[in-house]
Image (cartoon, rainbow, N blue to C red):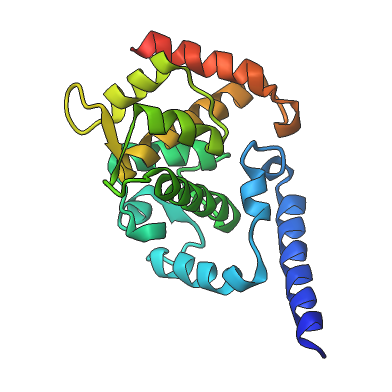
Length: 213
């Protein structure tokens, strides 16, 4: 078997795994973040399975919030209690208090996307993003916030009162907050992911942030 045939077989196996997960839980595919699951390729599968099992200390086959709090994510990130709770509210679709492997895949890829986005827009390598950089960075994650909303996010996630910048971990916390808003929006209006009107969601999230400011 050629190298290309081996790769094709491996990719087909991953596709079959994802389809089996969807067949087992059809609710998985309708989530707004399901494309993050589909980003998995054969090259990453073994590493992510190993990471999952190493964090699953009680060998339950799921990850609970306490296990996730102790884990390191892409870029060596460790997230605080507030961010972990936000992430769980996004990816724990059955509200069981834990996430399975495919929910974890989405969470991992969300964290990785946040990490790569932060690095891209931290052009001066300061380790922080200011309001102008946030305006450019958040749409890469699917969130379009107006200036007032950006100011509220800085206030909510900055390291000190009146902070005008966010670190990488604070950026991820802000992104997790917006992801949580998207999950609430989807559940409130009982939508499948393809039914979400992004322009209407943008109005919703800016309204939520205006009320939080």
